Each structure stands twice: as structure tokens, then as C-alpha cells.
Length: 239
Image (cartoon, rainbow, N blue to C red; front, top):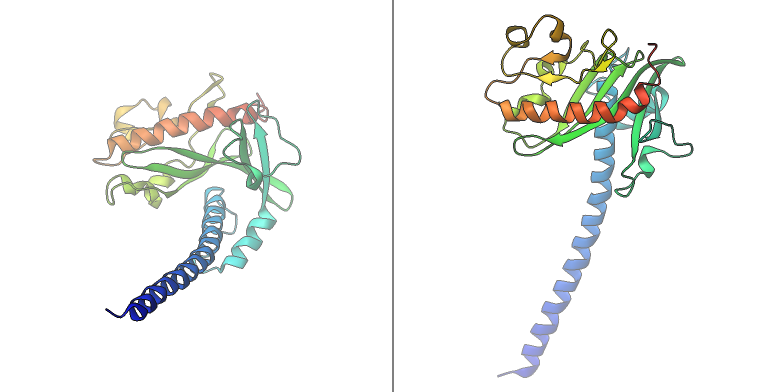
């Protein structure tokens, strides 16, 4: 047995492993940063979609252009559990430890407040659902909603990402000025007009066929986050 040859093979294998590991780590780190940038861009696109810009961004718009529109239209705030704005704090600074702090986004056109937007997160049938809900300046009427990240079944629960489902929420109310109470949006089984009264249609939307549990998840996350953000929105309503 040639000991020198064996030693050479062993050393060569170690060098190859070390070099490969370093290269993989470098590539992984580079991709991680790019992935984080892409995720941030996707989030900002969805905030812009939820607030229904007066001049919607084009699907062909490049990243830097989207960021420019976002920077000129959206003001980022952080509120506490009592609905008070936390001075000097931005959503990007929030960590998992900030359990009682919440991001809030203001959409403005030429200095005029148009809408408030905030994240909505909850459990669907198979996955966690991530989206944004926007309400008009009256802090009562839904302006738009978007669900952009989930792992629900395509063609069933996955329909939450489709325009037809998200458009159901536009114009619905999250607060009854008549009864002075919250009315978080409820996703029904079937057509809302067939199962609730005319008065209740203002906060009920059509469900997704064969996706009752996903719809239930949407109902629950809407109730949770509308209640959380009402601590701030209630200060804005003219009652």
C-alpha cells in the first residue's frame, strides 16, 4: 500500500471540501441578501396594491421604480397596543421581541391622506396566510386587500390570491357607525347574498368553493387584526 498516495488523496479531498464549502457559503450569502431584497420589494408592491393607488404601478415596472413610488406615496409608522404612534420607530426596526408594537402604513397623494394599511397574518388550512388590508381615510371602509404569500391548495384555498376574491372586500365596512361596533369581514360558505341579510352584506363576502377552512382562516385573521388596529383607527373616526 502506498501511504504517500493515500495521504495525498486524503489531503486533496479535504482541500476540495473546504474550498467547496467556502464557495457554497459565499454563494448562499449572496443569494440570501438578494432574496431579502426581493422579499422586501414584494411586500412593498403588495402594500401599494392594497391601498389602490390613484395611478397603479405597472406589472412591468422595475424594482427601483417601484421603490421610488413607494417612497413618495407611503409613510411608515409604528403604533403600540393602545394605538399611539411610537415616535422614532419604523417597521423595519421591529423584531420578534416587539410583541406590542405594530407597523402601520399611510398612503398619501399630494399630501392628502387616502388610506391606512396594515399586515394581516393567520392560519389557513395548510399554511400561514400573509396579506395587507387597507382602509379608507374614514377608518371605516375597506379600500383593498391582498394575500401574497401562502401554501394553500391551487384552485381551492389558493384562490385567496386571485383578484375576484380580493375584490370582494372593497367597499365593505369594518365598523358600524349606526351600532358603534366593529364589524370585521366574514367569509361565508357560498354566496353572501344567499346566506345573510341585506344589512349584513356590508361586512360579509363570498366564500371559495370547497375551501371552507381557508375561508374560516381569513375570517379569523381579519377579526384579529382589525381588532388590534382599531386601537388606532378608533381615534380617527368622526363619530
